[in-house]
Length: 151
Image (cartoon, rainbow, N blue to C red; front, side):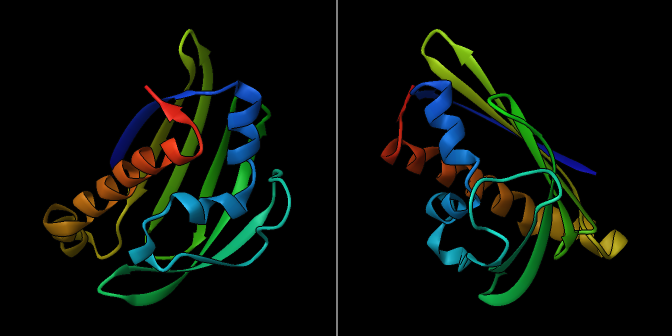
């Protein structure tokens, strides 16, 4: 099992940050263009527990994959969780936490994931998956300043 933790402080109100992140349609805005990310179904409106969202992504070598996630938990202005139901990982659990701080809002992502294929998956993680996942969250932190100032 692998865990990635990412934090960023956004100079905005908790309401502004929550409004942006509780809309699945905004995910494309903070995903690297090379990922070829497109929502196919279920991304309209604000998220809610039980919401199923289907995407097309190109995470490796431009090969398109279908990824289906479910929003499993939502605590408005505090956190939400999405979990993979079908896709490239054996398991993907992504927590998004929001906390008011003096400078604005601290947003923390905690991603817990497992790759398929046992030993081969562990090798793939060391060779490129770990870096790819980190690059996605680094990109996300950088582009969020288009929507919010970052500290």
